[in-house]
Length: 296
Image (cartoon, rainbow, N blue to C red; front, side, top):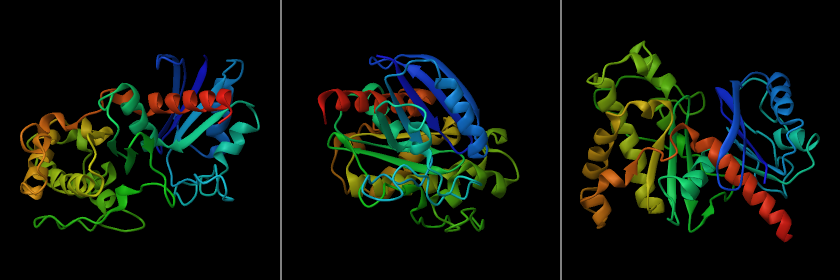
């Protein structure tokens, strides 16, 4: 099978070609600009490739309910030109093949469940912490949508007692994304996270917020694995800080050996590394092709 994959991020798009084994044999990336520019590049990449299906994992929020008018659209994003944009319809008008459609973080969670850190498990939660904060949920063998889809990047968090930063989310101010995403780090410390040393106080404050989010995910969803990806999580020193914060917050309440004795293998980086999103989009495309061939 020849499957197309699109990982549409708020900062960049990654397009690829893969097969049913999960192997990605060709890829290209370019900045996320106005949809008239970006989607032209997407379509040009896939033309002539003879793809049998395309999987799309995109930044959101997006419409996921086929019975609603906004299905296939990006909905309330502040990104210029993308709010209300008919993403799926634009691709479908050029390529008459089965298509998988979901959020970029749900796609990453699916990729990790198929081939990565959660392989063989029936549930996982995937956080991406970068330009924004997104959460993908894979539960009991399926991706979670519900009313819209998980938007766990905008949950409320307790403020760190030494943090006077007002927050950077244009919708909610000091929600998780407003306090812990890359732009919040940069605005608070007047430097990009990658420029801050490993022992900078930024990371203890960052772990304070991410640890709260992970604790809430454990209590609400009881996932078998928590995966933390995105550019901010390239700071490897965050993992032990976050694990310690989660253990402190849970305070032994959830009686699980993984949390009490083996948390290092429970809260982990993506097994697929920076390919989690693109691999997940590939998995969505494979699933769409299989469903089409079976008449589902």
